[in-house]
Image 1 (spheres, rainbow, N blue to C red):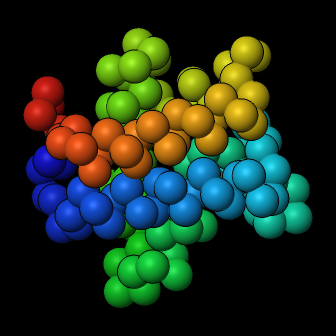
Image 2: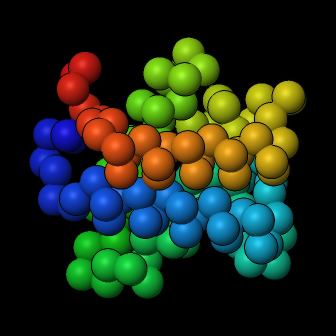
Length: 117
């Protein structure tokens, strides 16, 4: 887990899956966090999804979900950053949604972010 782990893998999976649903509903953008008006990038959707789920510390939940997503992307694609993956020319909405759902499933089935650091 991340160094200061406060949230269960189930909670992180829920946020990441919700973020994928948010992108599916509102659309996908690159190079900025986005909003419900213009669509979201992967991290923007995670941030938006974390806020209503944990009002006492949404930034920590968003951070930990972002770390989990980054490490899943790194393990799966060799790309070390979520923005690098999100903003790559070949990345599209379907790819981001698929990867985010894959990350959520992996968390639910034993993937533990933070072990390499």
